[in-house]
Amino acid sequence: MSHLSGLKILDLGSALAAPFSAMLLGELGASVIKVEKPGRGDLIRFTDDYVGKGESGYFLGINRGKEGITADIRTVVGQRIIRALVLDCDVLVENFRSHRMEEWGLSYEQLKEINPRLIYCSVSAFGNAKGMEEDGGNDIIGQAYSGLLDVTGEPDSGPSKTGTPVVDASAAMLSTIGILAALHKRASTGFGEHIQVSLLEAAYALMPNYVVSVLNGEPNYTRQGSGHPQLVPYQAFPTMDGSYIVVGAFHRASWRQLCTALNQENLMLNEKFKENWDRVKNRKELIAILEPIFLQRTREDWLDHFSKYEVMCAPVLSIKDSMQFFDERMDGLVIETEHSKLGKLREIRSPITFSSSPPVVTRAAPYLGEHTHSRLLKLGFTEQEIVDWKSQGLI
Image 1: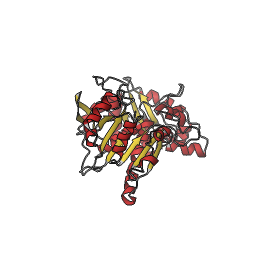
Image 2 (image 1 turned 90 degrees about the vertical axis):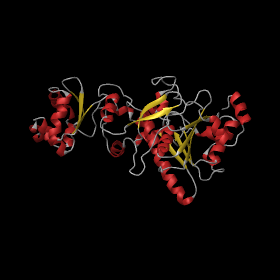
Image 3 (image 1 turned 30 degrees about the vertical axis):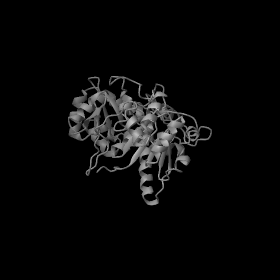
Image 4 (image 1 turned 90 degrees about the horizontal axis):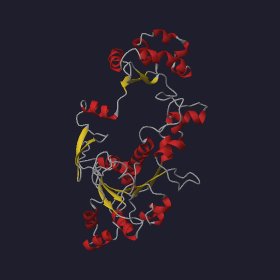
């Protein structure tokens, strides 16, 4: 038995944050119904064709294991379908602007009247920030407004977006945590509640070690490339063969291990580099000493050498190389799912495992409207209604 078996999730989200949260809940055992706009579908359905046959890799990676239906929730028919689904659902996730959901009769206050046990999770750009409550946003907007973009990039370049949509992913994780907490509380009270997560605060949540310093001091946080404004050395170094290796040797023991491995014990005795805070203040001078040393060997030579001294280090791998590297070392990391159009897909297993019942993922993301007909029949709508609504573009 899976941990969330029996729970039903209604996914009204688009793009990444809300749908990713719903997918995580699905991989823990809940059943998930994803509702999309007829004809167009989710915003990310057609962003790319890396996988082929018009199926976006972006969409496939965030919506596996779900049942997919189409319904235009801007219409009376679509709203009727949503309310019918809500009657039997435990959780609803969405990322529309709040006034839209109220206009459509689908806000938390309106839906809890028909299902008081409903847990309703809303993801917005800026939460209750005055004057911005209805503003839209996405991952890069969250990165820019929060300051995350400003501290990412090379020292002498402009700001850089992180390589992955970390703010969206953070919002998804926080939403999932909030939903699980609300489910636990509901077990005692019998009532659901409204959870709100903003991209702005999800971005702040990625910088807990920075924000306290900023709020209580005057740090001059600037872009450090692969480096860290609070820890030194903690970055990537180029090696003789043009590849990179990272080291994280900021505390006393790891700093001693690195200096010994580099045959640079004199650096340990230098007052400028004695403690991490000293090295932070004298970062440029220290890195100028270390960089030429790392260029004296290849990456693989360094990895082999450092392993003898227990230096905390790693190669900088591409995503493809990383997955190949760990697929050979981790049983079950790469799994196979079945897509109704594409056939078998290779994917990465759920990131959460349990000793009792590991998450089982077998079904890939649905194609647009794949389960509309069967789901509406289960809800009690007639065959004729379904045919008529489809012909009118309502589902």
